Image 1 (cartoon, rainbow, N blue to C red):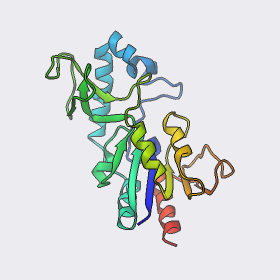
Image 2: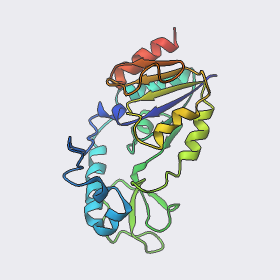
Image 3: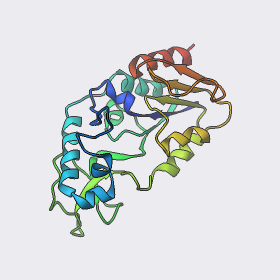
Image 4: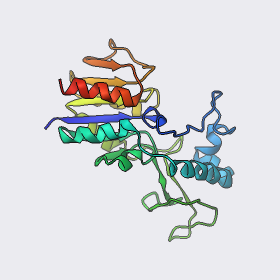
Length: 227
């Protein structure tokens, strides 16, 4: 059974109604990104950061997987599928995907501020005073700017084993996630699904661009893989 590795970004969740919380001017809900997505920002104003993620968590609980998520589950009938996602939502899991690696953390989990291995499932609001077993403040289980990406090594190893690489709804501009394509074996088929692709077919060997939104693009991918 051939192995398909799928790298997904915000574009696959957009059709579910996931808000990016980022304005055209680059601000997140009127805040500089470093105020709400960095260790420095959390230290300076933890209540602001917790409120920001509480809003995101609430919104996530109101949405459902879309056809693109469900299409990737269907691929498991004929392929060994592993998903590496930059998204912090749980829509891949909700749809039924069995192998999902989250590069940037998970919105429905929290962790200790001093022990990143202490992680809890968390579906409610998180407040100052919510502590781990070592009496340390709990924080969102999100990889913030300036922090290491602990799942990167695992993602690299998964990518190296791909017989087919599929990239959906990501600009390929955010590192280190954007570097994963460089770890794929040479000459394997690569499919890039995005309505406004940021790469061209001349950039990589055997690259096929499917210029469409994730739901329709994964329909086209099905036709190609089953032809």
